Amino acid sequence: MGFSVILPTLNENGHIEDLINNISNIFENKQIDYEIIVVDDNSLDGTIETIKNMLKRNLNLKLIVRENKNKNLAESLNDGIKKSVFDNLVWMDADFQHPPKYIEKFIKMSDTNDAIICSRFLNNSERYFNNPELNKDINENQSYFYNKLCKLFLYKDITDYTSGFISIKKKVFKNYKLKGFYGNYFLDLILYLKKNNYKVIEIPFKDETRASGYSKTVVNFNLKYIYTCIRYSLTLFISFFKKF
Ligand SMILES: Nc1nc2c(ncn2[C@@H]2O[C@H](COP(=O)(O)OP(=O)(O)O)[C@@H](O)[C@H]2O)c(=O)[nH]1
Ligand SMILES: [Mg+2]
Image 1: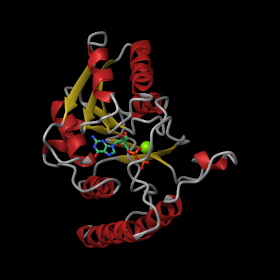
Image 2: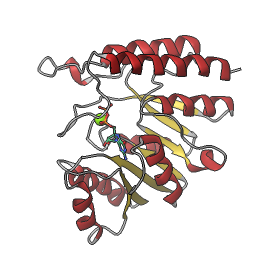
Image 3: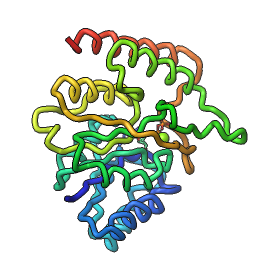
Image 4: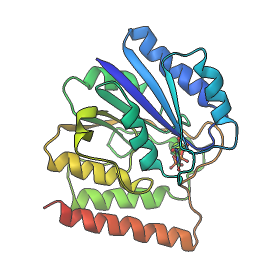
């Protein structure tokens, strides 16, 4: 058993070293083979230099810099998948919103499942904004509503269609590539898994606020917000028909 952890990065210098050390410790303590693949879309905040320095010390660390390519989260993950060497893949936000401790659950459950998804919307999931000191991101209500709609029209046993925190068997990608933008690549992946009868399970988790830096997906309430809503609705609409 081995794990390839893919970390897509765009300006995550404030915490990326901590995150990599944290993830490495989990696998080192359990003596499980692993690699961490950082896929960077030309960060300007020093993320690339930090990783290059770490490469000298951490032999399990790899770096892909997507030079001369358009910034794209799903394509970054595809590049990481292509480079990976182990049977189990994990990907997650590189900003501590997805706490690394859940990797221990992935390890425990990976023998009996093809995909394990950390969901924000199960009954016993907890949200960062339950803490009264933390503000809710502007797009949380939109995301909640969108995922409810997906559950209604797609699969009753899946609650988080835009999670982005997953452990998944590499074999899934023999005939499939991630496609789309931000969260909606994830919906397409769920559809593919379900249609091909892979064993998918969700587990509850407690998300955190980003450790530093800023979100690339939060949009203000303006034309871009409406455009994003339309793109997401279209994806759901198309997925509904692709389901059959
Ligand atoms: N390589 C790459 N990574 C990205 C891109 N956009 C976002 N990310 C990374 O994807 C993860 C999720 O993005 P984030 O800004 O945290 O979105 P949020 O969690 O929805 O606020 C983070 O690790 C980002 O650094 C991109 O265009 N390319
Ligand atoms: Mg994030």
